[in-house]
Image (cartoon, rainbow, N blue to C red):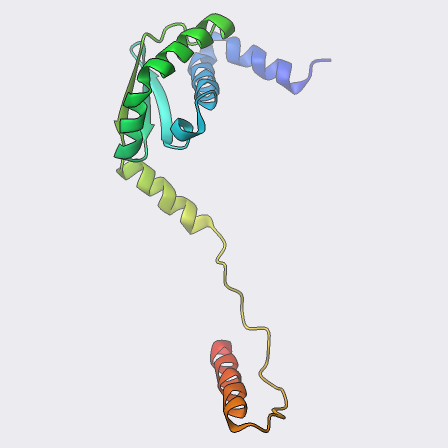
Length: 149
């Protein structure tokens, strides 16, 4: 009986899923990059024997150009070792603002707010004898009662 990994590998090797296989291989290649380069990558895709890498900010583009020889050398080694991404001859980078910004906004909409509802009812006895401390406890009680509304 085959396990899931073998079935997926078999499916990805079929011509119908060639595009998915390319995407998976390009993601594996990106995971090999250094953290400083990897953290700036929004997404990547291949077209016409070129690997296009979309970056989050223009500073990442400068750093990528600074290390482009290293990345191309890593790509050649990856092609030799894994026998994958053989059709890629060049790497080009560009900065994307709109797509990345939309993705960040979409992720922020799905996040759970970090605030919680007021759990206290504001019903406590104020036994403070000092007038300043008594007033402070009363202001805390007022804040609690306002948060419940």
